[in-house]
Amino acid sequence: LHPRRDEVAERAGEDPGDDQRVPRLRVVGRLYLAGGVTSVFTAGEAEPEAALAFRAAQRAGDEVGTRVYSAGPYINHVGGLVGFMHGVAGPGEARAKLRDWKHRIDGDKVYMDITPEELAAVIEEAHAAKLRVTGHLGSLTAGQAIDLGIDRLEHGIYAMSEFGRPSPTKP
Figure 1 (tube, helix red, strand yellow):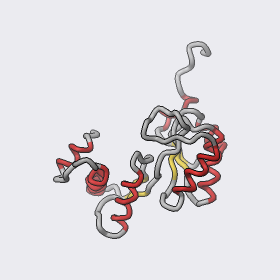
Figure 2 (tube, rainbow, N blue to C red):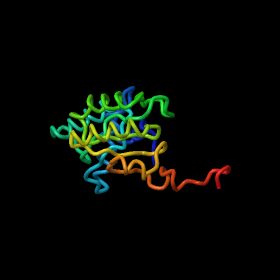
Figure 3 (spheres, rainbow, N blue to C red):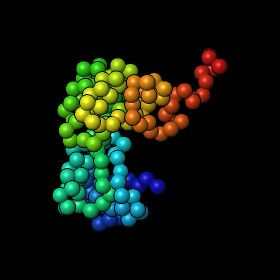
Figure 4 (tube, helix red, strand yellow):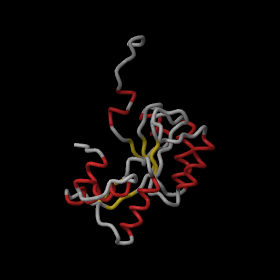
């Protein structure tokens, strides 16, 4: 079950308003905690500032819920399929984006269109900052990402092209 953000907020007595992100995190954090989940690592964030604000409020004792570890914004190659992801154009931009966020996040999430060169730059920068890199792959195989040093893979076989259906032209 994945209800709409405004529906979750309304059921919990929150005002969904125009800015639904923090109320949604508040509700979901409490629901997870009630279900016995004590910690979550976000799967990348469309609104990383809201997630960081919620995490800061939790750590200050102003919010109750599952402890949030933040992945910050997704790092994806420019021109990817998801509009809210502001892509990077090359390893230099990938490295710069991680540098901008590395002191505020708990790890990083790369997304489907990242190039091998961009991933290598992110991994090097993240590891230097003692951060782990998680990937939702598409443009690279799991083996390629592992060879580059990725720490975690998400979505299993679904996102691993080496287990995908063979091409009709290359059976």
